[in-house]
Image (cartoon, rainbow, N blue to C red; front, top):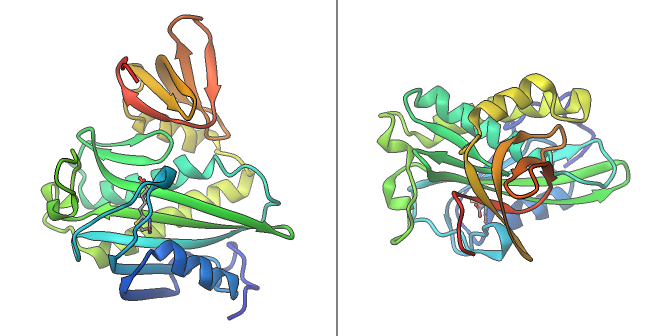
Length: 258
Ligand code: BTN
Protein backbone atom coordinates (compact mmCIF):
# COMPACT_ATOMS: atom_id res chain seq x y z
CA UNK A 1 0.00 0.00 0.00
CA UNK A 2 1.22 3.52 -0.47
CA UNK A 3 0.68 6.39 1.93
CA UNK A 4 1.16 9.29 -0.49
CA UNK A 5 -2.39 10.42 -0.17
CA UNK A 6 -3.05 13.07 2.43
CA UNK A 7 -6.43 14.10 3.73
CA UNK A 8 -6.74 16.74 1.03
CA UNK A 9 -6.98 14.20 -1.79
CA UNK A 10 -8.75 11.16 -0.39
CA UNK A 11 -12.08 11.31 1.38
CA UNK A 12 -12.79 9.14 4.36
CA UNK A 13 -14.11 5.63 4.00
CA UNK A 14 -13.11 5.04 0.40
CA UNK A 15 -11.16 2.00 1.51
CA UNK A 16 -13.28 -0.15 3.82
CA UNK A 17 -12.13 -3.43 5.27
CA UNK A 18 -14.68 -5.62 7.01
CA UNK A 19 -13.81 -8.50 9.35
CA UNK A 20 -16.27 -10.94 10.93
CA UNK A 21 -14.14 -11.30 14.10
CA UNK A 22 -11.10 -9.40 15.36
CA UNK A 23 -9.54 -8.84 18.75
CA UNK A 24 -9.89 -5.08 18.32
CA UNK A 25 -10.30 -2.95 15.21
CA UNK A 26 -7.76 -0.62 16.86
CA UNK A 27 -5.07 -3.29 16.59
CA UNK A 28 -5.94 -4.10 12.96
CA UNK A 29 -5.96 -0.41 12.03
CA UNK A 30 -2.62 0.24 13.77
CA UNK A 31 -1.05 -2.70 11.91
CA UNK A 32 -2.39 -1.52 8.57
CA UNK A 33 -1.30 2.06 9.25
CA UNK A 34 2.22 0.77 9.95
CA UNK A 35 2.40 -0.80 6.50
CA UNK A 36 1.12 2.36 4.81
CA UNK A 37 -2.69 2.13 4.63
CA UNK A 38 -3.92 5.47 3.30
CA UNK A 39 -5.71 8.24 5.13
CA UNK A 40 -9.38 7.47 5.56
CA UNK A 41 -9.10 3.68 5.58
CA UNK A 42 -11.80 2.27 7.83
CA UNK A 43 -11.73 -1.11 9.55
CA UNK A 44 -15.09 -2.55 10.55
CA UNK A 45 -15.81 -5.71 12.52
CA UNK A 46 -18.95 -7.54 13.58
CA UNK A 47 -17.32 -9.00 16.66
CA UNK A 48 -14.44 -7.89 18.85
CA UNK A 49 -12.99 -10.37 21.31
CA UNK A 50 -10.91 -7.71 23.10
CA UNK A 51 -12.64 -4.40 22.36
CA UNK A 52 -10.84 -1.44 23.93
CA UNK A 53 -12.43 1.48 25.74
CA UNK A 54 -10.91 4.63 27.16
CA UNK A 55 -8.61 4.54 30.17
CA UNK A 56 -7.84 0.87 29.79
CA UNK A 57 -11.48 -0.20 30.07
CA UNK A 58 -12.90 -3.03 27.95
CA UNK A 59 -15.55 -2.34 25.30
CA UNK A 60 -18.01 -5.20 25.18
CA UNK A 61 -20.89 -5.62 22.71
CA UNK A 62 -23.08 -8.48 21.54
CA UNK A 63 -22.22 -9.71 18.01
CA UNK A 64 -23.96 -7.79 15.22
CA UNK A 65 -25.56 -5.22 17.51
CA UNK A 66 -23.10 -2.33 17.22
CA UNK A 67 -21.15 -0.50 14.55
CA UNK A 68 -17.50 -1.10 15.46
CA UNK A 69 -15.01 0.87 13.40
CA UNK A 70 -11.49 2.29 13.49
CA UNK A 71 -10.46 5.03 11.07
CA UNK A 72 -6.90 5.71 9.98
CA UNK A 73 -6.34 9.46 9.89
CA UNK A 74 -3.05 10.83 8.58
CA UNK A 75 -2.84 14.38 9.84
CA UNK A 76 -0.16 16.68 8.44
CA UNK A 77 0.86 17.93 11.87
CA UNK A 78 4.00 17.23 13.86
CA UNK A 79 3.58 15.19 17.03
CA UNK A 80 1.73 17.27 19.57
CA UNK A 81 -1.56 17.56 21.27
CA UNK A 82 -4.52 16.07 19.44
CA UNK A 83 -7.06 17.09 22.07
CA UNK A 84 -9.09 19.06 19.54
CA UNK A 85 -9.79 15.90 17.58
CA UNK A 86 -11.81 14.36 20.42
CA UNK A 87 -14.80 16.72 20.35
CA UNK A 88 -14.49 17.11 16.57
CA UNK A 89 -14.86 13.41 15.93
CA UNK A 90 -17.66 13.25 18.46
CA UNK A 91 -19.38 16.04 16.51
CA UNK A 92 -19.07 13.98 13.31
CA UNK A 93 -20.83 11.12 15.12
CA UNK A 94 -23.50 13.48 16.49
CA UNK A 95 -24.21 14.79 12.99
CA UNK A 96 -24.41 11.28 11.51
CA UNK A 97 -26.89 10.18 14.20
CA UNK A 98 -28.98 13.33 13.76
CA UNK A 99 -29.23 12.80 10.02
CA UNK A 100 -30.60 9.28 10.58
CA UNK A 101 -32.66 10.01 13.69
CA UNK A 102 -33.60 13.70 13.72
CA UNK A 103 -35.90 13.26 16.73
CA UNK A 104 -33.23 11.71 18.94
CA UNK A 105 -32.04 14.03 21.74
CA UNK A 106 -28.35 13.63 20.90
CA UNK A 107 -25.67 15.41 22.89
CA UNK A 108 -21.90 15.38 23.04
CA UNK A 109 -20.45 14.63 26.44
CA UNK A 110 -17.00 16.18 26.61
CA UNK A 111 -14.54 15.10 25.53
CA UNK A 112 -15.86 12.46 23.18
CA UNK A 113 -18.88 10.46 24.26
CA UNK A 114 -22.15 10.71 22.40
CA UNK A 115 -25.38 10.44 24.37
CA UNK A 116 -29.02 10.00 23.49
CA UNK A 117 -31.35 11.10 26.25
CA UNK A 118 -28.33 11.34 28.58
CA UNK A 119 -27.33 7.73 27.97
CA UNK A 120 -24.21 6.73 26.08
CA UNK A 121 -24.88 5.58 22.52
CA UNK A 122 -21.32 5.90 21.16
CA UNK A 123 -17.81 5.95 22.56
CA UNK A 124 -14.65 7.13 20.86
CA UNK A 125 -11.09 6.04 21.49
CA UNK A 126 -8.15 7.90 19.95
CA UNK A 127 -4.67 6.47 19.63
CA UNK A 128 -1.88 8.31 17.85
CA UNK A 129 1.77 8.33 17.01
CA UNK A 130 3.93 10.77 15.10
CA UNK A 131 6.50 10.15 12.44
CA UNK A 132 8.18 12.90 10.45
CA UNK A 133 5.75 15.74 9.80
CA UNK A 134 2.76 13.43 10.06
CA UNK A 135 0.60 12.39 12.94
CA UNK A 136 -1.18 9.07 12.48
CA UNK A 137 -4.37 8.93 14.48
CA UNK A 138 -6.51 5.83 14.83
CA UNK A 139 -10.04 6.89 15.74
CA UNK A 140 -12.07 4.00 17.13
CA UNK A 141 -15.83 4.46 17.27
CA UNK A 142 -18.26 2.04 18.88
CA UNK A 143 -21.91 2.88 18.27
CA UNK A 144 -24.82 0.91 19.69
CA UNK A 145 -27.31 0.06 16.96
CA UNK A 146 -29.52 -2.32 18.94
CA UNK A 147 -30.26 -2.43 22.65
CA UNK A 148 -28.59 -5.88 22.74
CA UNK A 149 -25.30 -4.01 22.34
CA UNK A 150 -25.59 -2.59 25.84
CA UNK A 151 -24.05 -4.81 28.51
CA UNK A 152 -26.24 -5.76 31.50
CA UNK A 153 -26.18 -3.16 34.22
CA UNK A 154 -25.02 -0.36 31.91
CA UNK A 155 -27.34 2.60 31.32
CA UNK A 156 -26.71 2.92 27.59
CA UNK A 157 -28.78 3.94 24.58
CA UNK A 158 -29.15 2.39 21.13
CA UNK A 159 -30.00 4.01 17.83
CA UNK A 160 -32.80 1.55 17.06
CA UNK A 161 -35.01 3.21 19.65
CA UNK A 162 -35.00 6.40 17.57
CA UNK A 163 -35.14 5.33 13.94
CA UNK A 164 -36.38 2.39 11.91
CA UNK A 165 -33.23 2.84 9.85
CA UNK A 166 -30.48 1.81 12.31
CA UNK A 167 -28.55 0.15 9.52
CA UNK A 168 -24.78 -0.30 9.88
CA UNK A 169 -23.95 0.33 6.20
CA UNK A 170 -26.03 3.49 6.04
CA UNK A 171 -24.51 4.77 9.25
CA UNK A 172 -21.01 4.01 8.02
CA UNK A 173 -21.68 6.09 4.88
CA UNK A 174 -22.98 8.96 7.01
CA UNK A 175 -20.05 8.76 9.40
CA UNK A 176 -17.62 8.93 6.47
CA UNK A 177 -19.27 12.11 5.18
CA UNK A 178 -19.57 13.87 8.53
CA UNK A 179 -16.17 12.86 9.91
CA UNK A 180 -14.60 14.03 6.68
CA UNK A 181 -16.37 17.34 6.95
CA UNK A 182 -15.27 18.09 10.53
CA UNK A 183 -11.71 17.01 9.76
CA UNK A 184 -11.53 19.22 6.68
CA UNK A 185 -12.58 22.19 8.79
CA UNK A 186 -9.84 21.34 11.31
CA UNK A 187 -7.22 20.97 8.58
CA UNK A 188 -8.07 24.39 7.15
CA UNK A 189 -7.31 26.24 10.39
CA UNK A 190 -5.43 23.76 12.61
CA UNK A 191 -7.93 24.55 15.35
CA UNK A 192 -11.65 24.20 15.96
CA UNK A 193 -13.11 27.09 13.97
CA UNK A 194 -15.78 29.33 15.47
CA UNK A 195 -18.75 27.91 13.58
CA UNK A 196 -17.83 24.34 14.51
CA UNK A 197 -17.13 25.35 18.09
CA UNK A 198 -20.56 26.98 18.32
CA UNK A 199 -22.11 23.78 17.01
CA UNK A 200 -20.23 21.71 19.60
CA UNK A 201 -21.25 24.12 22.36
CA UNK A 202 -24.89 23.90 21.27
CA UNK A 203 -24.66 20.09 21.41
CA UNK A 204 -22.75 19.90 24.69
CA UNK A 205 -24.35 17.69 27.34
CA UNK A 206 -25.19 19.56 30.56
CA UNK A 207 -24.02 22.93 29.29
CA UNK A 208 -24.84 25.59 31.87
CA UNK A 209 -25.38 22.90 34.49
CA UNK A 210 -23.25 21.79 37.43
CA UNK A 211 -20.89 18.94 36.56
CA UNK A 212 -18.10 17.08 38.28
CA UNK A 213 -14.81 16.79 36.45
CA UNK A 214 -13.05 13.55 37.26
CA UNK A 215 -9.34 13.35 36.57
CA UNK A 216 -6.76 10.70 37.40
CA UNK A 217 -5.90 12.58 40.57
CA UNK A 218 -9.25 13.76 41.91
CA UNK A 219 -12.35 15.71 41.07
CA UNK A 220 -13.54 19.30 40.66
CA UNK A 221 -16.98 20.81 40.56
CA UNK A 222 -18.08 23.57 38.23
CA UNK A 223 -20.51 24.57 35.53
CA UNK A 224 -19.78 23.42 31.98
CA UNK A 225 -19.70 26.57 29.79
CA UNK A 226 -18.49 25.26 26.42
CA UNK A 227 -15.23 24.32 24.77
CA UNK A 228 -12.11 26.20 23.76
CA UNK A 229 -10.59 26.26 20.27
CA UNK A 230 -8.15 23.52 21.28
CA UNK A 231 -10.96 21.23 22.46
CA UNK A 232 -10.52 21.95 26.19
CA UNK A 233 -13.61 22.14 28.38
CA UNK A 234 -14.38 25.57 29.83
CA UNK A 235 -15.48 25.04 33.39
CA UNK A 236 -16.83 27.83 35.55
CA UNK A 237 -15.46 26.87 38.92
CA UNK A 238 -18.11 27.01 41.61
CA UNK A 239 -15.71 28.01 44.39
CA UNK A 240 -13.19 30.29 42.67
CA UNK A 241 -15.71 31.93 40.37
CA UNK A 242 -13.22 31.83 37.46
CA UNK A 243 -13.47 29.95 34.16
CA UNK A 244 -10.79 27.28 33.86
CA UNK A 245 -9.80 25.49 30.69
CA UNK A 246 -9.57 21.73 31.27
CA UNK A 247 -7.58 19.55 28.91
CA UNK A 248 -8.09 16.04 30.30
CA UNK A 249 -10.68 14.22 32.35
CA UNK A 250 -14.24 13.05 32.17
CA UNK A 251 -17.37 14.76 33.36
CA UNK A 252 -20.41 13.49 35.20
CA UNK A 253 -23.68 15.31 35.67
CA UNK A 254 -24.18 17.25 38.89
CA UNK A 255 -22.06 17.50 41.98
CA UNK A 256 -20.79 14.04 42.93
CA UNK A 257 -18.89 12.41 45.66
CA UNK A 258 -15.94 10.76 43.86
C1 BTN B 1 -15.00 4.50 25.27
O1 BTN B 1 -14.46 4.01 26.26
O2 BTN B 1 -16.01 5.18 25.36
C2 BTN B 1 -14.40 4.31 23.91
C3 BTN B 1 -14.95 3.09 23.26
C4 BTN B 1 -14.41 2.85 21.86
C5 BTN B 1 -14.88 1.53 21.31
C6 BTN B 1 -14.50 1.35 19.87
S1 BTN B 1 -15.30 -0.01 19.13
C7 BTN B 1 -14.30 0.13 17.73
C8 BTN B 1 -12.91 0.44 18.25
N1 BTN B 1 -12.21 -0.80 18.58
C9 BTN B 1 -11.98 -0.89 19.88
O3 BTN B 1 -11.39 -1.85 20.43
N2 BTN B 1 -12.42 0.19 20.51
C10 BTN B 1 -13.03 1.13 19.59
